[in-house]
Length: 205
Image 1 (cartoon, rainbow, N blue to C red):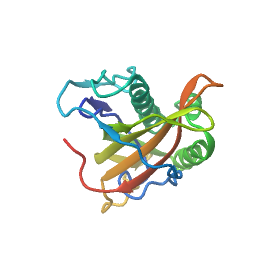
Image 2: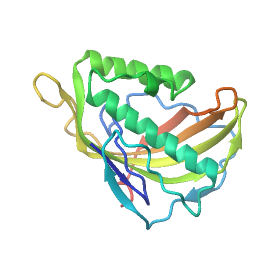
Image 3: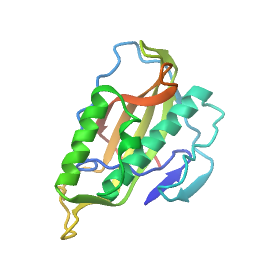
Image 4: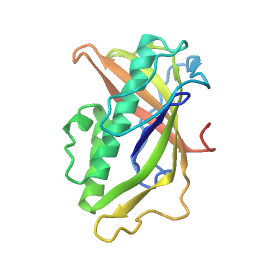
């Protein structure tokens, strides 16, 4: 199930432990100085939709076009991740091709492990898009860091045969993300390049 908010864009994200230590090793943080962060307005439109819907990030007075498309890319990434783990037979090519480099290799290896174990995701993980940093230039092209927080208090990963949870019942539920979204001029596409993620305080509501 996919839920989205705009203050806040809410989507489904699946990760081992779902709020425990993320199972995919975070990518490196840029060594460049951290630019100022553009915050998402705290009021706006709320919508609920199914995972098959198109990204619904609403235009923001504080997001420039690059920041907006980066946020939409993050939303799409989480939606495809949700679909891949909720259904053992779901195709994964689109999900895989949305990532690049080590992040693609690590995330797809983790997904393969989940599927091999016969585990499926159930419920909803809410992902709050909190803001975006200014556009940077990297070797491959321009880059935008999107800031997000995931709330996995209504999500579980279960054995597809027994329906029993495979997660630690004492896991944490709130993970804070800094996701590097890169535009490749050669591919004419935005990609998830790398990210950092850490357990933290509850997401803003």
